[in-house]
Image 1 (tube, rainbow, N blue to C red):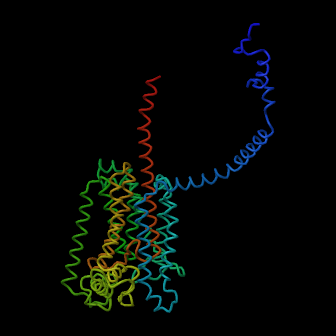
Image 2 (image 1 turned 180 degrees about the horizontal axis):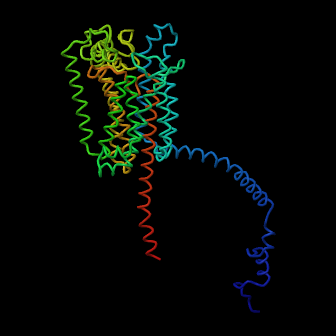
Length: 473
């Protein structure tokens, strides 16, 4: 008998293999192998997917809030914020150490009373700071809003001049219980915004027909500025007048206007200053009691020791404080001049207390941070592409520069005492609020310019891609 070929499978074996290894395309066989364990596992995974889909909306809300906060703070200029925060904290600490004796002498129990108020002023100042930062700079050029702000300030200045009593020989304060407001401080940011818009609109006209003819053709902003100057003289507040005039002059130089007008005005101011110092040095007018308080301050500026218990009291004790401090100071809280000898130790003359307690090193450190911020803004202004943004930053940096110069000039006897505070450091709600408004305007301008620069870079990057895509088609 022939032997069977075992290499070929038999028909019975083929049937068995087909029944034990079904094809995957057969639906019936799929049903046959869908075991209960796999069904249970499939249901469990579906439930988990449903739970995850139910949790997704809450996760989206959380991430959207965080992303919104991130985008809000994304364009904040970090050097400006960091340096400003350090200066504000330094100011609170210096107000604490300079005002402690005033609280004790007046019978108060909380030695940190003025420091707490200063911290409260800083917190309130965060409202205009972060309120102005996200706004579009086009809103700052809205003429109706600017005119409304000018009208409100003029009314407040008239009220301060004629309805409230003078403070230290000058009007300018509106006192409502524990709250005192100095409206003249808020004129400074308005002057910056008015003239930045004016020079942006009429810069070409000034170059074509001249400066004074342009002022005659478009007189609204010059008239507003002249009214502010007149009210400043009526207070009288010659420190404020000097700051407003300096801000306007530096913005004029930066606007592209011929510098001969500003240089002539600057030369006239310098000549007037030298003539005043010469007259007060040659002629001793300190004995004339009929002179006004402002003129007596000017005479005390030239020779404070002639009336060291009167109008020269602040400057003489400021000299003592700076001389006693030396290079490294006598230590925090160890000042003697703040114990009733130096009036306004926590306010106009706080830098004298800094010099006494921390010496020349402490003053240099504060000035290094302060002038870093000032010249950083000047540097950013030079790089601005939009003329309006450039002028706003120049005006803000000029405010910080001139305000500190006038304050330090009074503390060191280089300028007459005019009651000008040192930004960030001196005690005062109006000064802190104006400082925060200036910072908010600066941050808004820097944010707008940065976003415009990013858009231009994206358009430059995308344009070659579009050109290559069209070339392929």
